[in-house]
Image: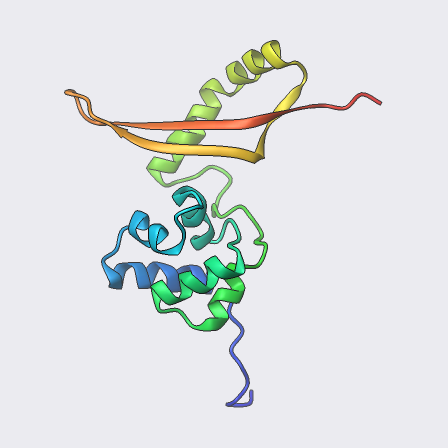
Length: 157
């Protein structure tokens, strides 16, 4: 390999660079996201920085600046990613596994209730909004996640 040849960055490499820069900066994800864009959801920006979404060219350049990443990393952050970052079909991380457990236990219930209300179709994960909040509770704070996806009926042809 030629010593002057550019190094090709992969999405995984950039994700690890982002994680390392976050650790070194001492900033929270919310702080980083606020410095990148006040208009884009912090959930979306965090997902993009972790390799699951793409940023606009402007957001990607700002992310590289905020995190001290090379300019080539901004090009990667602006590319459409190959989505799906879990290393196994059944997640092994306990927090992520609880979401899997929710689907395993309540998935058929959600399907029945959504389709009873809306008809035969799906809830979009593309035309989708999500918020996460902390709810104080005397028995221990609670995580509140609100998801809203457009209903897409199956076409009959």
